[in-house]
Image 1 (cartoon, rainbow, N blue to C red):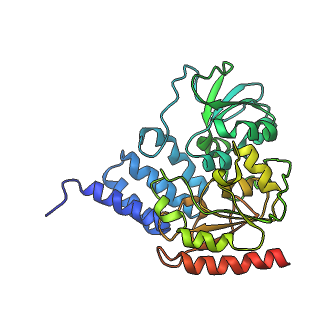
Image 2: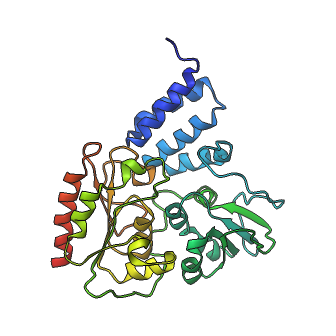
Image 3: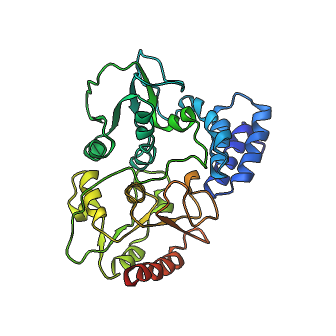
Length: 323
């Protein structure tokens, strides 16, 4: 029986290709769909992600401008009377930067706040409440947490964090990569490796990304390994987690906020990536990350096979600790 909405079938196939890291195939499919339906905002967003996954940032970022129309993919437009910053000179302007998406995304895009300050902007940052103290200590701007009603200073204009690369004209070659978060190390006796084996259970791809308990236990059996989950460390926010991470030699993490935190601190981090549920930022077939020079990527060869990945990660971790 023929589909009622062939475009929906194509979008679904494009999404499947994207999250399998088959970015070039996803690009071809979404371009074909957009020829038939030029106003299909979801196809446009999938095309953007396909281009980002191939490192073609200059082509990809402008397509992200309409993501607020794709409610299932982006963030709602802020109910502000002030205009959105469209790029260009920002010196002397009061700019409200609004964090969006998950903790890891907000950490990743925070690298652009120092760039805005260098351009002369008077930046106020609105972020997840658990990031407030960490960003205050690291970014030298006024920070407000998203918790209940928030009264921020009246801005001249505003911008969402995921829009900053487009507004700033960022390419793969000009991506800021120096560590941009700071934390005083909190030493835990005997602790050398931090393990973040689970992501947000509410994330649609958590079943692909988080480790089974038995594989997490193998990593935690490494000499000097500790569990980085807040339940295990007692950390009340990301500032406290950052202090713990700063005191370690290595972080081993699935695709979750701990990986971004370690990378933003410049801490060596092994990132374990699934064969399905892959995010564009990790690209395909690479063992390094353009976003985090201190990261080393370990990829599943087959969906669901974490055992082989953990074997390789454990050997590499021992080399770091014994080296």
